[in-house]
Length: 79
Image (cartoon, rainbow, N blue to C red; front, side, top):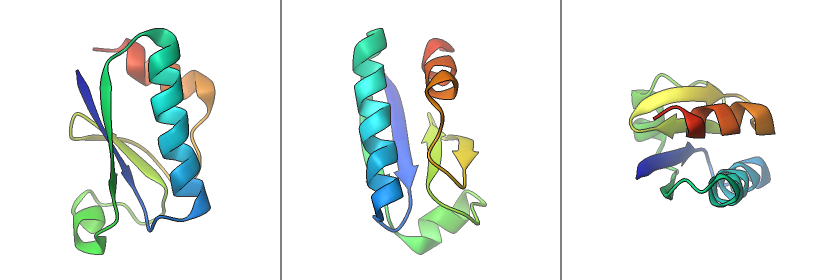
């Protein structure tokens, strides 16, 4: 199971990113736990300056925008 953290303030883009991660994981059959991290200190701990950001299994894979479908599918495919 992959642990996915969506980092951000809880804004619309952050919510949409969490939805996309959950939906695409279900579509490709990858078991995930999606968590939202809103604590500024925790977000800065990943070196993120722009949200939404995505962390998969404690590795920052994206920041600054809603990720594209192809990118999300690639992240989910790499285990």
